[in-house]
Image 1 (cartoon, rainbow, N blue to C red):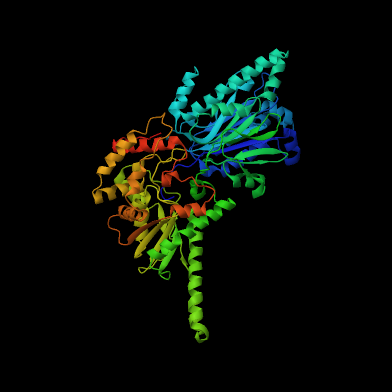
Image 2: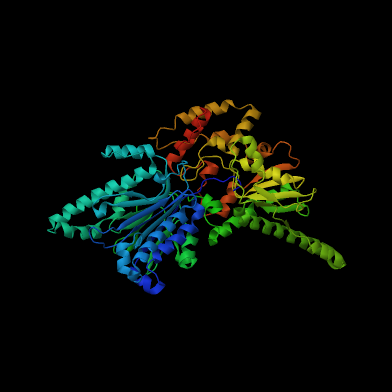
Length: 632
């Protein structure tokens, strides 16, 4: 995106099903799991760059031996920092004890991070908190092995206040009011309760306290714990957890908002946020990697048995469409085709904008992530031209001369790489007047690629705030002297906050919201804004399970084309010579291209949970009252 927004977090979980000696013999290293986790985290680097964390559990360690390890980093390159620390510990141990280079049992006992159960996490700080305390995984420690809990997730809860109050009612004293802490403590509470009940029951059966430990691990019902803990969760989540004795789980929200995929063979169970990550790292086929159903959990017991359990009743599937448009890696077979179709479906509007003049139109894209939708757009342009060529050839028939045929066949879409981002350039000056000048140099342009008689069509993944377009990209493209610049968004207009993970929180940040506000001013209907505010005030109570999204009324007076036209006026920089037009994908086009991911609340305001409606109303209240703060 030309305007970068914070991404989703990424989770990885690996359960090695064989003893570590097996991997040493087959793959040449006892660090097989650590190496695979590094690859999985790097392959999901696109999902988070503010921080990363890694945790591992060793099975069947003796009392007094360390069996859990965790390392986190909020450095500039957090994944590399984590594994540099891990490698340093491994190399130091083997350098000091070279006689144990092939002794897997000694390595497991004496070197941290080498275990059969591993968890990885990459994150973006949704609240701008990038300190090490906010980096996953989170650890809940206890002297009882079964009560140790490690949690990491890709999630955002809309009802943190309610969850916090629930913990207080249970008699807890949470250290802070954050969804990560409240979620972990909620799971931890019911884990403690289940362990205590099992211990009591096993003692009644005549087993000793020491014998009880193995039986608790065997009998612990992880699915039941998750059902109790998640009963009141409102949000989008893929939640992963490790329990000290070796059980593991990954749970997905009932609407399937956040993604999760899994793979199993006789060596490993693997879960990740993206399918191609598992395909690449473990060299398996597309069909071998399964999507975790909404409301379900992958549960792996200490014994290594894996089961899929329904935790919460699935609701209407509303998987996040932004995963398909932008967040997930485009190497996924389905996502690649979907992004191409997004480009294809927006082409008819482009054709109208350029008056069908493909001979005098140059097609390009910014940024690189828009390349796949660009392919779809250009292919559709080629299909259109092929049809026109066919009509011309048939019309001329046998009277056609060779030169005429050559001229017809030589017409094709004009494709250029008109802008290249200078990855080395950093805008280090913070004063607006100086910074804006620097921002205009973030992209280099290909001089001579466009003629003064040309239209220039640029496709982007989406246009969120439009800030970079206005301050930088449109000014740069205008230097190429096109007669018209058409900026195409492969996604529809972003009108509403996303409260389930993406860092899009304030209504006034969205250029579509600014455009609708400007249209109200143009049409003399600003009195409606206060009326909407008063309706929104009635919908923000956290206990309201039937909240209505009244912010939809803010946009209802205007068509999508009216808003797009106003966005073009707002984003066109002062002094630009070229005409500027903005074209957005339609909602119908989005659903046609991404039929399995119909979560579109940021475009339509149709939130899949009650908390979403409360949040969007709160966001409007904040806007009207001039509060520069998040609604969640």
